[in-house]
Length: 341
Ligand code: TXA
Ligand code: MG
Image (cartoon, rainbow, N blue to C red; front, side, top):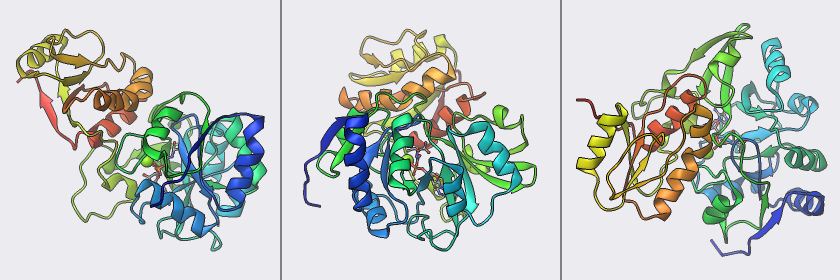
């Protein structure tokens, strides 16, 4: 791919028109959201969508999420909207919930990875909502990282991966949540299935309906297995370093690190452990919210520090912890070390 000049601009009225013109003419741009940064294109423009796949190096069968700014836009995409989907939209939009709908014929198959469904969400970011409205079409936007790397939670992360590949990055500051949206499909009139956990937790969804957690959320899928959410089958969220999950108490983890740590071993813990001096610590927080916010940026920091292996302390899986653990399992290729054994 030829190198192009990448402009970094602060989110605001000054850049709104320019960004909308770029997207209207089939260009692509990185945009801020409350979860992670997205790499946006006109969801209805096949050529623009292809540029997104190319810039990320993303497999063609991994569908994109369509970002909308109004429920009218949802009706332009979805062939059918179940009452439960409307209830959840009212409860959680704008916000980190993505729902899957049967798609109308005019929504390009390329945008949806060849599936006859489309994933839709309304992001909670003032600039991005204004941008979508100005464009007048939904923005297809996967996370703005190179495919396989940790998702970007700041404009600087996007720049690391996309400099020279895209014309515009809009800097809206650090993302509030730090992990991607919860992806659900409507299973029946009173049940949803979580395909990817996020900041809208199973506990929060249970206020409105039954919740099934898809086996792909916490289990390794067999090669060739049919998956409801194609994104789940790829190695994901992985820095260059080899990642391992470590399980145990403060003490057992400290003694594991003291005996296994070598020069430039990285460690993401809760901050309460006492690792050997050779270990470089990137504490990722005590609460699930802090851990979600910091996980991807800490993994990127470990790479920047030159760590060749990184141990990450196993998070609690309640609430948003399920999303943290789901991402971590994939970045560690499901490798878990029990330090109490
Ligand atoms: O928070 C987010 O969702 C971010 C921001 C930018 O909005 N976007 C994001 O996109 O995480 P991406 O492309 O990295 O992940 C989209 C996920 C993938 O796991 C994909 O397989 C799934 O959503 N997905 C998209 N369309 C789908 C569909 N029609 N059926 C099932 N899964 C779908
Ligand atoms: Mg992604």
